Length: 496
Image 1 (cartoon, one colour):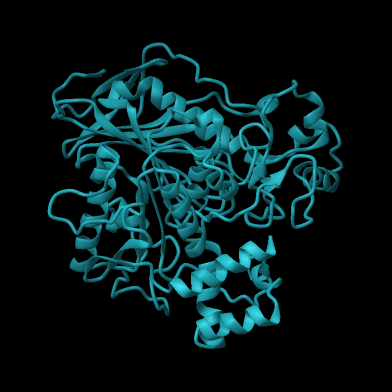
Image 2 (image 1 turned 60 degrees about the horizontal axis):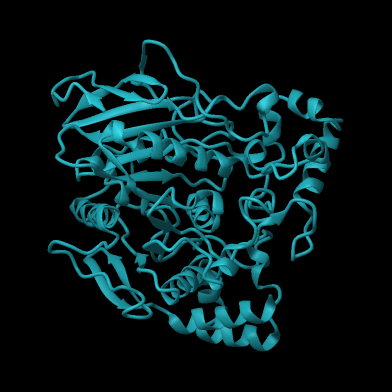
């Protein structure tokens, strides 16, 4: 438990299984940062399952965040967090109200960044403002890139039968959830009321946690922000459906570039070397179907009713990839290559011509239709489901846009507009208050509705209706551009 209970104490203590933490108190919120949830995955423990954190003697200072995981330079990304970076990065951060009367809902944030970058330490993800609403907030680091998602024949040869492989970053997230289960009460949290929420690649990890047997029971609600849904995982030792190589073949090719053919030689390669060339998130280098933690793709699991039976928020932004055209030389740009001439003609008509098609079709192919698809399946399977569309655009946003760009909802969900990459106004704060209110209410009850806010339709009771977050406030309405999404659904059903 947290001790002492004096909310004015600037150095609160919390006793977890590993020992005593000394945190910080300010503005009615207690924070504990840089807390190890697993032992460092370094040396011989690179590309192995995370091990429980070791106990410490005495008191451990938890006033500073830990190192971020190995990743490319931030280049201005406000979701990365401060240096240093290290392979010794498996830490988490906790914010909790100083005053409380009962066990509180716990919200565990899984950051995005294409499984290549990001951290739980960025100011963007500071949990103070959410904690003030009566929840315990946890943000985590997990292994990234080839250090987090990788396989090689030499690594396979040293593993025990049935030992999970390749999905080490996902294993880290599961280990963090196990730590939360075992230690939530130390911060006033309810281990039986845990919400996982994540954005982009973090949202894709949320959907994978929903279909992973190893994660079952570790969370009780889920929120997916721009988290794909039709993506394909790469098997360990067989080709992908699209013909791409297996995880082991990819790892072997990478090792050959460094002359590394043994596990010992692979572990001797400097960590930063695994950043070059950059692994491809959507191209199969990092999303893994390992056969143990993840045995099938997300859409197939939802279609078969095998996902976690928990309340779900899922949604997207209105102009996710507005800057990316299907004619671009990228793996996203290849998504429409399989269209027939008749399909392409129908798409061009639905999008009002080539300009509209170029601007919006990739956002629909990657995010909007897959989110609707998972929402339909989850609701069909009898679980509370809430679909949203985020269309709040700050007047100060400098980008040319026709809607809310990818990842722009994060500062609103966390009510951290001070971490916004562009100036904000009163309208933006109203939107942040609303989104943070919906998300924390959902964490508490499994239903985002309450208070005087606009009612958010349950997707099962009110099919194909969502909540649209706009500059003028949230609006309940039919899913926008449903005819476009119907074309995409038919295309996916035909092409797979």
